Image 1 (cartoon, rainbow, N blue to C red):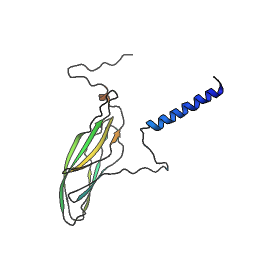
Image 2 (cartoon, helix red, strand yellow):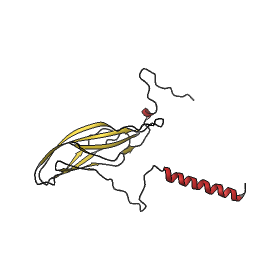
Image 3 (cartoon, helix red, strand yellow):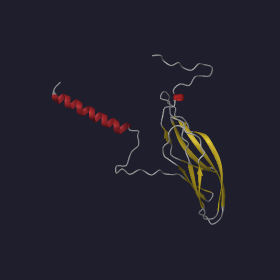
Image 4 (cartoon, rainbow, N blue to C red):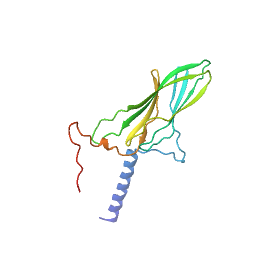
Length: 179
């Protein structure tokens, strides 16, 4: 192989690697000036009330408990009473051997009756949610009547071993390979 052939092979390999990286990148995209992107918190406007749903952080470790905050405002000229439902939705990691994407399921729910005077603004902290599990995507859903909003999913790192092999009822679990 000549030097020219080796350089052509090297340039082709680098170009292919860069093209693959650009096409298949699944990580977060960071602003070029180093600025941190602001989390878009969902706002539910229903029944004369505006409620913003926030989490205390944008990332969690397995076993941690998220703390939520609702900021409710009544921009109308009359008192308003509504009942909001808050849910913690959890979706497990997709299995690497399945084509089906898992569906987010509620794991925690709480009813919140809210009464606000005309022009009142109130912040409500909700610390007692469920713990997050490894290898899941967690989101929070706020609902009043038929209207609902959901936060962006928060990925919890870690491998959920239950996703790899689940024994069928009546069968013994798979054995570990011996060394």
